[in-house]
Length: 407
Image 1 (cartoon, rainbow, N blue to C red):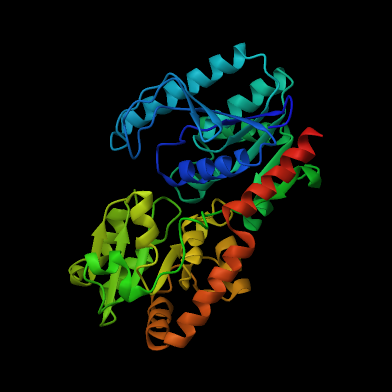
Image 2 (cartoon, one colour; image 1 turned 45 degrees about the vertical axis):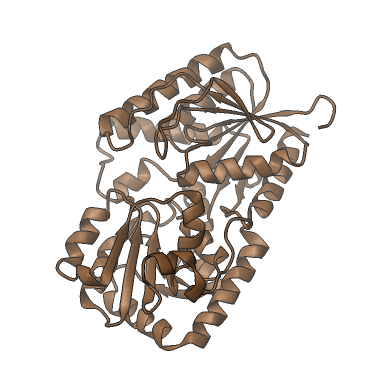
């Protein structure tokens, strides 16, 4: 490491050893950046509570990263009130630690949990510290669009005012999609263009690579060898259009096996729409990173979904795992979404409008009937992934950003 390197501080509720999407993204990114020995990297995170609840020491050096597990509860993620307490306890620890910190590190903060970034950015401004704000999901606007919250709610109105101030107070805003960048421009129209940058999400090119379907251990374990497999893997959250998927499953077609891996708030509507057609489905819980690397290649096409209301509100990271696996992407998403743009410009799959069950079924039948098309799309997916969406690409993008901010 160079003499007296500049410090980068990531504030994130989830980090290693949790294995949820946000934790995996930032753990892998920071490990790759640490390998360059350009910056000293610190992380403030909460005690793990998603994929493990084993309490960690206060300080841990993980592959060159100084990880600080702040005082926080770690109730099970399945307990709603426990999760809220986890967020509040971690947020209080962050605020108190930041108040008494004299460091001038560059702070990296993101939108999970959503209100913490607003508090951090406000404190950082008082303490004259630079902040890079990464937009992973947009709240509360996404909830308003989905009808889960109202702009008439005084709390929501105050939140939006504070969030606009936060957006205007950061050194850089990182959007993970072009559709999200459009939302930022509309939300803060006076924002200088150089302060908004689009950096796509990433996936570990070392963890996931194409594997022959017939010899895949996951395929053999679950007896999928003779099936045409359509897979959805990951969080079944607010942004996902699983109603359309469920209706398609209920209609068939014959010879198709639908594999669903994960859980989330939208799972109930998926199961409800499938109804009595469950014989052609396989449901599995969230998997470890090691199991995931095999599961994502154990299908003939991978599903990614985004509701119309969620345009610009988020970019499901699962698309990059599918592309890394060299699997065709079947995207149920608005045509102007980042997901649809990636699929169409990379020619790595098919795009269906949310709610269009017949087009989804036609797309599945087309992919099932045309192995050559699947091979071509799969190769295009992997090529596009290697060019733009690897951890290495993400590390290069963020190193360039840090250099610009700190020079």
